[in-house]
Image (cartoon, rainbow, N blue to C red; front, side, top):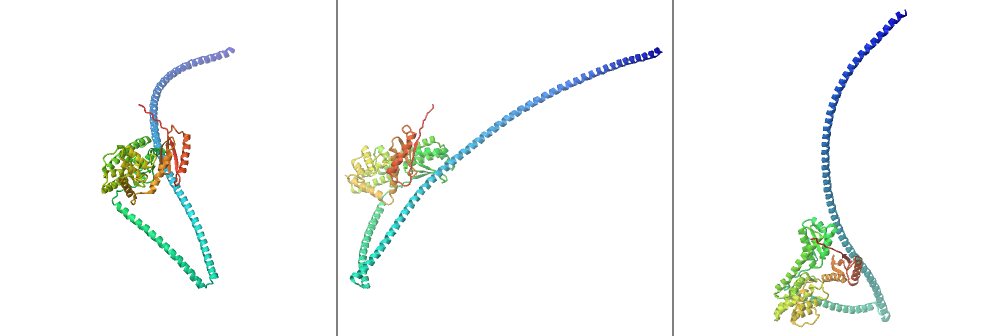
Length: 543
């Protein structure tokens, strides 16, 4: 029974195990086949992946190369843009600097103009204050005179009343009798006053008659006199355009300062279009400045070194013109022999004035008049002409040498071996020494005729020039002073010192010393500015 049960069970188990084994073998075979197929698929996929990876790497490499090319192009473009930006920045910087420089020049010019206007306003203010003070003094004087007059009128009324009362008391006269007595006394006084008025009137008429006679005589003499040239104190130079004014001023006004220091002439740049003005009372300096300025404007290069070069050239030209002026005067009067140095000194009179009268023209005129009168009297005509021409020769250098023009003229005539007749005419034409010849008298007469005719001279101008000369003389009297110029119509003195002899600290003391001496020795309206300049210049030339 048990076996019957076990056998089927064992058979079933064995069948089951066989089935399991067969199934396992079958599945294993199937799995191996699938694994082989999967391995093949994996190998195929891996090959495809590797091919795709190689293609991707090639594409990435190409993209990297393209990226590098793009990056290089971007770098080049960036550098070009940076260079362009730097160039634009540089150009803009230059433009801004040029505009700033122009603005600075304009501001400097405006500052100079404002300073000049301020000086003018200060001067006018001073004149107005003086006028107000003078008017106030005159008003006070009129009030005092009016009070004194009222007091005298009251005293006179009191005296008249007292006199009438005394007449009534002493003479016991009636009112009509006293009135008649007073009128008779007044009539006597009126007769005296009338006689005095007539006498004064006659004297006045006689004086007027003498004056009229002198005027007629001078007007008659004028017909034989040569023209004279009145002195001018300014020269005007034309400009091609308004921009030239800024170039003349220079950076912070350095060109103006250099020009004025080298020439001693005041350079005025105002609102007048296309002109600059040169102001100075020394005609030689002003002529040198005018020629130098015209050369600078024509050349266009304006800076301190160029200014100095042009001023030197202009000074040489003026010196040549001076000698030509002396020779022209000799030819005009027919004088053929004279020392060349004396001819040059004579030519300087072209730029010298006396009371507003040109001294060279005056000397030529005196020479002609003296020669004409000498010929009429049968005297030596040529000697008279020579004496008349040289009578004021000392005025050519009286600004540079101490002494009167008469003393200087005598020394020059002796130095260059002029005749004693000429020397005596020079020495005696102002009455300083006796006249030893008739020619000396003729020179005095001709000098009087030439200088006394109407309009020939202006005394105020001569006094003005004398004051400017005194200002320069005072400044030059101090040791260490190299040059001194009176400018701005005598309101400023510019003193240039030698830097090796005067230190920076000493120039302050020098300015105060000059100021004190000017205040002590000169009379002048307004204020005078003393400017002391110390400049040390070192030049080295590389070869």
